[in-house]
Each structure stands twice: as C-alpha cells, then as structure tokens.
Image (cartoon, rainbow, N blue to C red):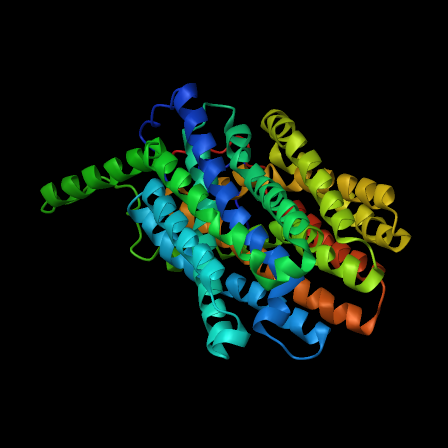
Length: 469
C-alpha cells in the first residue's frame, strides 16, 4: 500500500492547489443547501428503513414462502443485501455524473430513482398472486434502490460540505448525516400506527404497502427542494479552471513549454480513483465499516431477532431503536462542531474505541428482555456511533481532490456499507443459527469496529486540508 501523504504536505491529496479558492457560499445559502441535503437523505433512508422493517416483519412469507420461518426471513434479508450489491454500480454511475456534470444533478436523479423503486415495491403482487414473478420483481426494484443509494450519500454530504463557510465543514456536512436516523424514525412513525390500526394480521395481509406508497409525497417534496438549491461553488470553480486550462492549452499548442495546467476531469473517475489513491480508498472503507455494522444490526436485524428469537415484544425493539436513534441525532451537530475545533480523528477514534468496548454489553442487553435495559444500552451504543458517523461526512471527502471527490467519498462509504451493513443481517442470521446467543452479535460488531479503529490510526488528520483542489 503506498505511503499516505502527511497533513503538512503542500499537496495534501496529490493535486495542485487552485490559483484562488472559490468564494464561500453565504451562511443562509449554505444552511439551505444542508437542509435540502438532509431532506434527501432522510427520504432515501426512510425508503430503506421501511423495506428493512417490512423484510423483518412480512416480506419473507409474502414473497418467499417456504414453510420454514428462518428460511423465509433469510431470503427477505438477502433481498435487503441485494440492494447493497447494486450500490457500487450507483457509485460508478452517479460518481461520474457528480464529478463531471455536477453534484446537484446527480442528487436529483438519484432521489427520483429511489422514489420510483420504493413506490413500485408498494404496488407489487405477492407470491400468492403472481408466483415466481413476484420475488423477481421485488429483487429488481431492490437493485434500483441500491443503485440510487450508491449516489445519494456522497452527493448529499459533498454538496453541504462544499457550500460550508470556512472552519464549519464538518458541521454542515453532518447535517445530512442525521438523515439515516431521521429516516428510520419517520418509518417507525408510519409503521407503528399502521400496525396498531390494522393489527398484525392486517399489516401482513396488505397494510404493509402503506408506508411504501406514502413515499410518493416525500419524494415530490424532496425533488422540489433539491431543484431549488445552487450547484457546489467548489465544483463550479474547478470546472471553470479546467475549461480555462483547456482553452489555454489549445492556444499555446505551438509554444515550446506551456504552463502546467490543473489535472483534467477524468472521463472515468472511479478508474482514476483506484489508480491514484488505492491506499486512501481502502483505509477509508475500513474507517467506515464498523459504524455501518452498528447501524444496520441495531436498526434492521435486532428488530427481527429480538421478537423471533428472544420473545421481546416488537414495540419494545422499535421503541428502543427509535430512542437510541433520536439520542444519536441530538448529538450529531455538537459532535461535528467539536470535530471542526479539534480535528476529525480524535472524535472518530473515541467513538471507535467506545463501540469496540460497548458492542458486547449492548447486544447482551437483549438477554434481559427488559425494555428499560435494552433502551439504555441501545441509546449509549447509538450515541457512540454518532462520534464515528458525524465527522466521517467531512473526513472521507477531505481525503480526495475535487475532481474525484464525489466518487472517492461515495466509494469509501458505500463499499463499507455494502461489506458490513448490507450483509450484516444475513451474516447475523447465519451466526445465530449456529450459536443462539446475542453475544455473537456483540463480538461480530466489535471486531468490525476494531478494524475501523486501526484504519483511522493509519489515516492522517484532514481538518486543515484545502477543499478547493
């Protein structure tokens, strides 16, 4: 693995400094962009959370009837994982759009694609009605959701970060980071009343479609908001410099020694990323992998595992996860502000150490079957997750130059999500079929958080890195 440049190097990510930085966006504009990014990530993760909860509750028997509850659940969770397999394709597609044509354009397209796929799931016939066509269509729509998610996160945090005032990059980038937890809370706020009103049998018989179909309203709002925000000033400035350099190069084609020009926008950003920054990409994936495992095992898998394997009431699990998610949201902005003051790594390393230590006690709390104990354990765990999750929105983009930043940040975060998040429910299901104890979840999660800790130790501090190059 090539040696990483130090934070004091004049070219922090291997790209020439800009002749002059782009003018920073005004705080009102930066705040509006950050809120627009938050709305988008909330909607995208609402759609994902609705599917995860539905997979835990009804999609197994509805689309994969087998006569074996474990096999049906495993099949449903595998469709959950299928969307993560499609995320790298989303990185390739939307990373190219975002790094070549603009951040905002990529975000509008990704949100539209997610909306179409989610509403489509709500309209699908079940296996009883359509036979094998039903699971085939379900997997197809899940793949489209995955492609959408591959472009969403990087674009949302990048648009907010590149609009941020000086010294506030982590704070503004962290605003859309609240989207995953807000999306989960919003999905719970829809699913719980639907369950209460329709009853478990009614929910299983067709009321499960309601949360998917309600996504239509959210997507329309999100598209309108995103269409009204301005393009990233960093991207606009970089594109202008590249165009000027190309014009100058053509004009000086006959000159014996033309002046060095800025690195051109790559036609295939992902290929350039892998060629130029393989070490940073791999370490960035590792840095985000533990947090993804904590999030998905807590928010998705345990909601199914607790009731089915331990007899914990469904409402207890949803409430515990919701309160923990709300606590994580509450400290997201203060944590990001701290990362702007003291650096990204100290905050993220603290969160990684905490998650390594707390992973086993957090999932061991499920054995108590006590709502208060479980809620307390989940609240501590998801607040520790916020220490890792909040600063990473600025940390990963700061590892890469502007011309590859959308692709680089997206690839690191999305591949971490795919490896540790998308397969976490399926791996956990398999592990618990071998060792029927919630402690297994703790050791599995703690091991991945330890990997993140080691990768963070190998990466440089990025707080003072130039962002306009």
